[in-house]
Image (tube, rainbow, N blue to C red; front, side, top):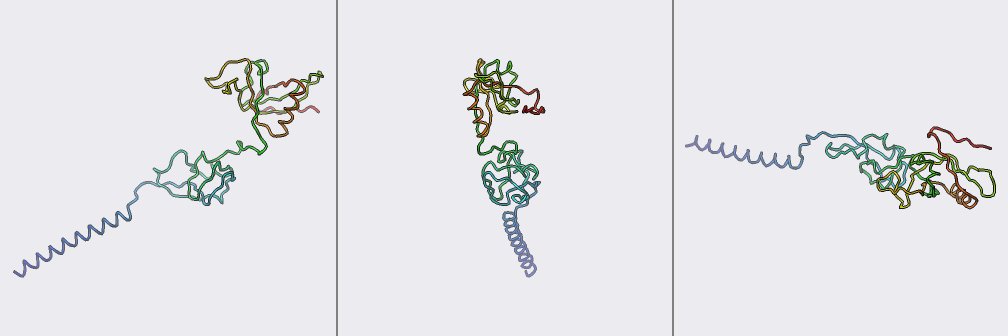
Length: 217
């Protein structure tokens, strides 16, 4: 009788041990789940970054994240970020995404504005003047045979049709009059506006973007 009681007691204790062990292990795994996913290291904001800030190394830190949380939109190298402007505010600890940044060559000065000027098909040099090409803008005065250069080597941002569509787009209309889109500062715009009152603007196309303007004194 005593032996059976000992065995029964041992089995009961063992059952209680298994139950407690299961409860403890369940609690541990729920509270501290095993992370077997691969991790990657990406730059993140070390501080709140305001819109327009030129991002420097002091603004950044390295953050470890699960690989599944990463994407092609997230910058993975600090060199991709430093020296660029924040397009909008970036909160501390946020990842840095490519669309959060403005490239240095896309920065605009405070006095720069977009203007459009009309051009005939002849002035477009049989459509050779296109988006991304460079032109000198010259003035043929009504009162003189002298042709003055108003602006040297201006980048053509786009060529638009009469509806405002880019002539490179499929929806563009084939019209004789088009509009050249430029980004100019205040002084350059004033030169253009004054020149338009004195005569006709002439556009001279550069053969390639490597050519340097020749300023005649």
